[in-house]
Image: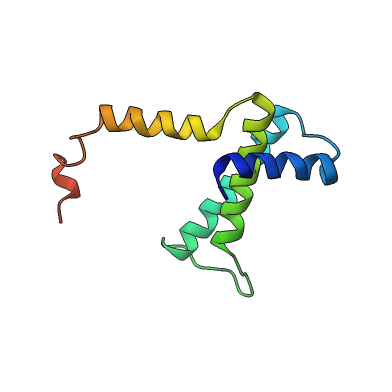
Length: 108
């Protein structure tokens, strides 16, 4: 699925099942919540925290939640995520083309 197709599918899902988009600030709060849930899993899976007894978590599921809400925000604010990502990669390629190669911290 392309990013454009993902934006279209989320919009279709909202119209069929979600009635309407939550307002932008509600979606921003939801995005923050979902990123927090992802951070919690990362801290337990790759950091020093441990899972609580019986606790199960899925990086796939949490990343999907983050992506879904981000796409909702893009759709309701008129952002073409394909263009936004392409523009961002171009910006980073120009600005950072030698930055990481010259960073001694990244050398193994």
